[in-house]
Amino acid sequence: MGRGDNLTILYPPGCREVTEDVGPDELIRRLKTLAHTLQSMGQDDGAYQEYIPLAMHIADDFFLSYASRDVQLLIACCIADVLRVYAPEAPYKDPPQVKTIFMFLIKQLGGLKDPKDRH
Image (cartoon, rainbow, N blue to C red; front, side):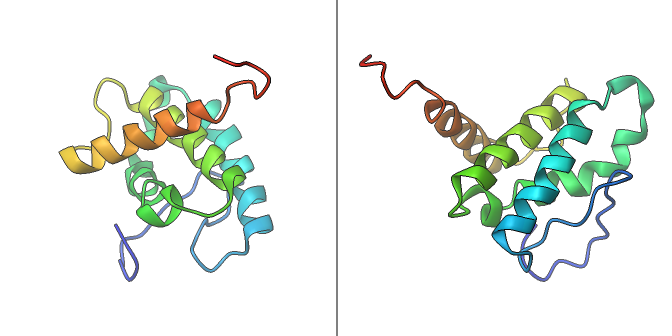
């Protein structure tokens, strides 16, 4: 996925598009809604299959390397729930992409450590 792709991306009800032309504040608002929606999604409803293009979209380098840490953290939350909902068959299949995603998630976890902790 990348700029210029003409793939139709469906969003869950109540979620708005997350695209490169949305400003940072609005993007954060939209990602919070998306993260909350994905968090409440279960494997048993089966409807999540239609959101595979969305799962691929949020794992785009544009979002993984976004300047805002808040955006990156929300993207990480969304990807973590994608992995949970789609388990054991994650939509991410390309080995370099899988490595990039997991390195991104590990980096985000490192940012959650207590700044007062010296270890």
